[in-house]
Image (cartoon, rainbow, N blue to C red):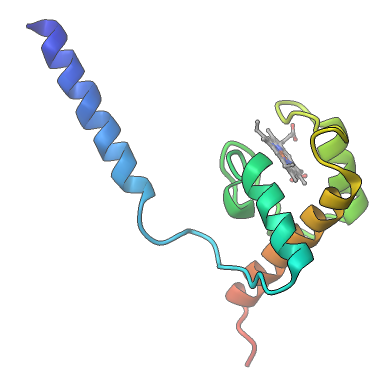
Length: 119
Ligand code: HEC
């Protein structure tokens, strides 16, 4: 009987957590009209977004709110830091990394535009 109660509680917990994540995305949608940026978005969604949801803070700090230079982000992706794993060339090629950085820059721009709408 107790086991059943616990399973029910766990189910309720999972359902509650599941619904909290649905709905509006917490980040601005990004124009993906440029093929390179669209490709960067695919790389991002494959490897990065689980810890950096849309560039916002998730498991990891946000990076859409600070001007991180491209070479630093490249270094971070190639070598990792702390909990963040390294992504070697076999996983993310140099071309893909270029697209990825371009996409991350659009995330930051989208965030800036949202914070200060052009008047
Ligand atoms: C397993 C979770 C995880 C994944 C996957 C991950 N990161 Fe990270 N990332 C982290 C953590 C944790 C940090 C903070 C590291 C620290 O400062 O100790 C971080 C930091 C960063 C930073 C620096 C942020 C700052 O404030 O200086 C950048 C840029 C970054 N990640 C980019 C990426 C990109 C691009 C990808 C995809 C290729 C990626 N990360 C995938 C966990 C992750």
